[in-house]
Image (cartoon, rainbow, N blue to C red):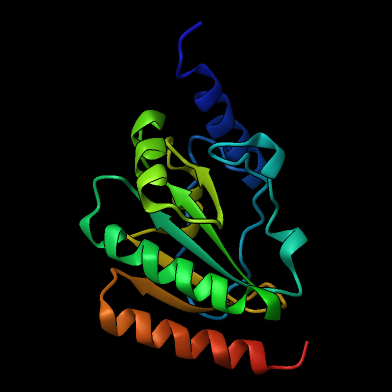
Length: 174
């Protein structure tokens, strides 16, 4: 069996979970938009499969990344610190990888050493649903499942803004 076959199945399952077909055109996913539901398999361990719908009630940052993305190398440690510092208050991060080769994503994941959930999107179905326009791209979702902030690219200013936004959303009533 081709070593990419399970990865391709995961990507096909992501497209089905989102209700996307080959001809689907995504509208811009901007603040005020409900987040699309995902039910992907985890990159390393399928037992960690998640659904964004199941995360309602939490503040969620959906981060699109790739092993070839230089700003992603900066974002991962910042997102890990934010996740570790706020997960007890109901904050989680879901990293969505856009590498075509799963091996590249796994190598990057081992080096990054993050503890939040990472899933794969090699066929771009999830990225299209989120209207990803830059790498990395992040979507901060409130407890009701509404996208409140969109970040395209990542630098120190992005990290500071994101930390403030997470604090603000966590302070809102459930």
